Amino acid sequence: MPRSLMIILVTLVLIIGTGKIALTSENSCEELMNTKCTGCHYSNRICKKLTKKSKRKWIRTVKNMVRHGAKISKDELKEIVTCLTGPSPGITAWCKEDE
Ligand code: HEC
Image 1: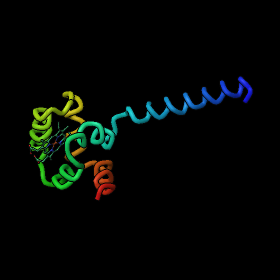
Image 2: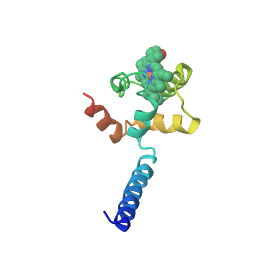
Image 3: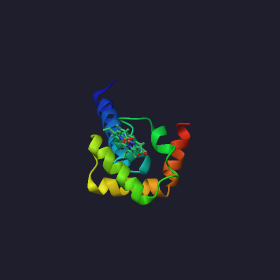
C-alpha cells in the first residue's frame, strides 16, 4: 500500500475513533448506568426498582452505593437520580434491553 494511502487511512480511523469517544462521553443515562452502576450488580437490580422509589429514596440508594464503593461525584449523583426518577426514556430502553 502506498504510504500516502496509509496516512489517510490512519487519519480516518483516528477521526472516527475520537468522534465516538466524544459521543459517548456526553453522559447519557444509559452511559452513566453502564459505567457507574453495573460494575457490582446486574441492571436488573436497578430496573426492578425503577418505578418503585421516590426521588428521595433514589438519592439515598445511590449514596448507599457510594458507601459500597461506587465512584460517583455529586454532579453524577444528581444526573443519575434524574435518570432514575422519571424514569427517563433512556433508562426504560436500557432496562428493556436486559430483560
Ligand atoms: C461498588 C459496588 C456497587 C456499585 C458501583 C453500585 N452498587 Fe448498587 N448495590 C451494591 C451492593 C453491595 C448492593 C446490595 C446491598 C444493599 O442492598 O445495600 C446493591 C444494591 C442495589 C439496589 C437494591 C437495594 C435497594 O436499595 O433498592 C439498587 C436499586 C442499586 N444497588 C442501585 C444501584 C445504582 C442505581 C447504581 C449506580 C448509581 C449502583 N447500584 C451501583 C453495590 C454497588
